[in-house]
Image 1 (cartoon, helix red, strand yellow):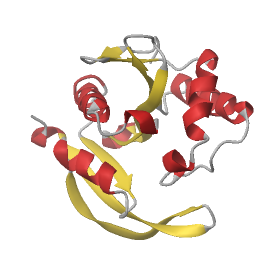
Image 2 (tube, one colour):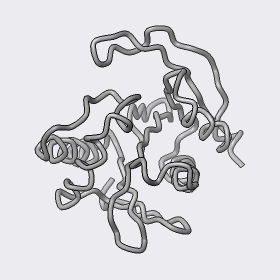
Image 3 (spheres, helix red, strand yellow):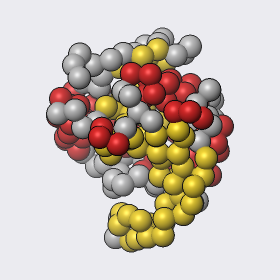
Image 4 (cartoon, helix red, strand yellow):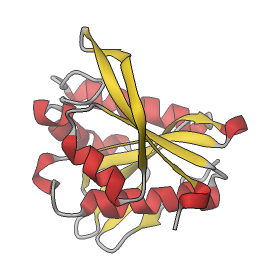
Amino acid sequence: MTPFPELETKRLLLREIKQSDSQDIFQYFSSDEVTRFYDLESFTTIKQAEELIQRWTERFENGQVIRWGIALKSDNRIIGTCGFHGWMKQHHKAVMGYELAPEFWRQGYMTEVTQKIVEYGFKNLELNRIEAFVEPENAGSRKLLERIGFSEEGILKEHFYWKNRFVDNVIYAILKKEYV
């Protein structure tokens, strides 16, 4: 699956995440606001960001994951990430995930990003189904998914165990035939 595919939106570049981006990744992953609905504790050291980048790189090289860095075209600084994990190639499906630094929330950036990666998933990765799992209280993420054409399919009770508690998830999905 190499080389790493770069994608572009009106304001953003979706690119490979490098170790040189670790400070940007650390900055927003150290925020409880960002990790509130994430399966990671807030970062306390830059090493945690370096290790996360390394895991994403290795999983990409093994054909398991693709995680783009979301960079502003103006300065190429990483302000978030997005991509596909839980990739089941034999079933032509994957799970979409994303996060964004809080200072960029509610400005339409994630709508641009998710529309672009959904298009890429259907056109380039031969996906037929893209899923997203969202905690019921995460209203912003739920609105985003509905805005880009995902449908709520139900609640998976105590679906994950994160941060010493069982977490319900709302499952959202979009099928290739529903994609416009």
